[in-house]
Picture (cartoon, rainbow, N blue to C red):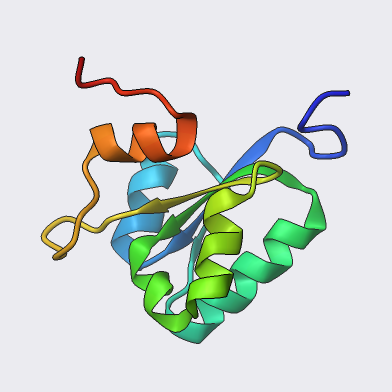
Length: 109
């Protein structure tokens, strides 16, 4: 059974205007400008919809989640939820540590 069975294989982005616009410029049409609690609500809606296989979300949404909810989203595989840091934010996760956490692969070697 395909782990993305039921999803349409689409990608979406949820976040600040600059994040959504940046992804639109590279061709991801389903890029939505939401912040705060509204972004968290959209993440819940989109993750349950089975319309998307990958959802990129601004890392700023994490401050509206408790530990249990954050762990739930970070461990999802269908859809795969990826938190994207905004440039200049503190606590930016490096690409290397993100790959290790999500894929289990150390790309620094």
